[in-house]
Length: 352
Image (cartoon, rainbow, N blue to C red):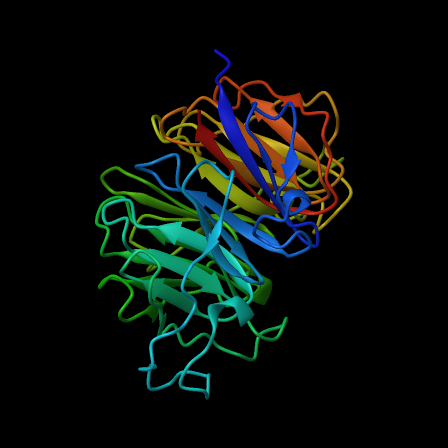
């Protein structure tokens, strides 16, 4: 059944756009002089799990919050705490968050006063609803193939909110068991160095639970809390005789349906940004996969998904080069929305 929802689209260079009518029409936030700035980079948009009115947007001008489904925004207090981790790469005793390149924003679903911001590099945390911030001692390696790593995703473990996971580009997976106070770098998720280019994380409850992460070579799974990983490949595009080891589709993101974690989606493409993409869908917790038919072939890698637990069958998918797709049945079928953007980096959904 079709749902009435608000959609948020974050872009690089084009700021933030909001649709309050399920994607039929969009309003560019800068057109009315509202915040965030009209030409900023918005790589992260997150709706509070307990209150769909509240939305966070991570931009290159700071973290903004809306209390009314995106109609107005305020810049959160961006002054960092003065106490820094002993091994922090930063040298000043105060650092404005609006000067940090933000790649992810996560709200702790158990304690929504706690917010995690993934940056380039590292992670920042607020424990007082965004009034003050501290940099956490992630201590990423700074000698990676792309230079300074980016923290592309922070995931609060659904089994215990004191356990927090972080995926980095390109420095693999980190885990904290004390709410972010300390971190451990987990073993490599694949044989190649670029397997440490992590943009998607998900945890499927069970005995044992399964941790999923996406890599440029496929997705990796762990049933021992990240101590070891198994790599699973998808066929390359246009390769009907593909066999494992022949090369694989590029995997960017992974999505798990909140009301049924056996239903999973992975966004793939031939490379990044690529010129073709696809959605992979599983109904058995990642054991088998199908490729849902899309009326319009994606013009680049399928970069991300947006949904909300209150309307779990409504899912928005986007390519990096501006296409939006909508499913109202949990990802079984999809329609392409007419509106196209230049360079999308994030989508999110609030039920109206």
